[in-house]
Image 1 (cartoon, rainbow, N blue to C red):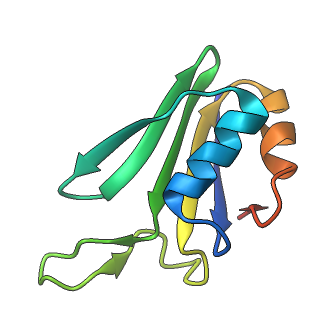
Image 2 (image 1 turned 180 degrees about the vertical axis):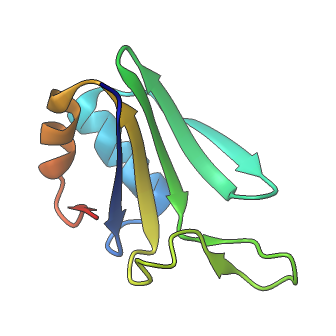
Image 3 (image 1 turned 135 degrees about the horizontal axis):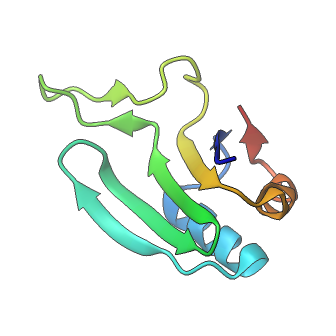
Length: 100
């Protein structure tokens, strides 16, 4: 069964978090720029996908809005779509990254 999980951090920037996840899990991230999400990072792996993005995203009225308003203290979000429990073990070992 596919699991969707959100992690958050206020310790790392999106690019720093992408580097940490690369070192821990060997995932290769691609930087993307989206009108809706701003600059974010995505990596596909054999069991799913990991995306890292700022929680603050461009709003319609030129003011930033929170992507996950229920987690306002998380400056950066890491979103997973995965079948592999081992992925979460690796992510849980990153200091400052919390499963929301």
